[in-house]
Image (cartoon, rainbow, N blue to C red; front, side, top):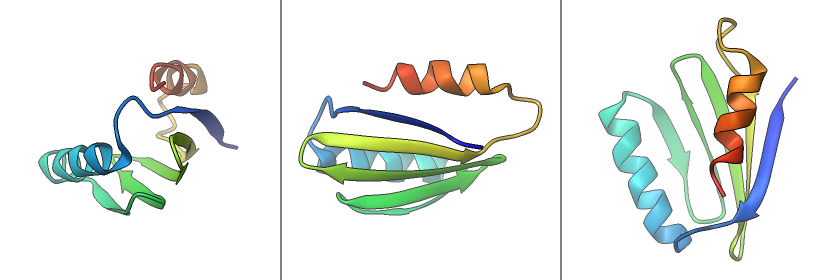
Amino acid sequence: MSRTATGKLPEPAETIIAKLQELAVRHHVEFEGNTQSGYARGKGFHIRYEIEGEIATVTVTKKPILVPWSVVERALAKLF
């Protein structure tokens, strides 16, 4: 089971990826990606993304069992 959100990026992809790389290091999360696609894994979450122009699609493919999908859905809704 997974959840997906798609929307327009609020900043250039390069800026967002740089921020994600910094946050991943700070929070001890594995992050691999570029301005087209990538993934993050850590703290029980597996997330992948794809970027096409100004549109991004983020998919949460795994979450901790104690975190309800409704919490994940609310977090995804806030992205765009």
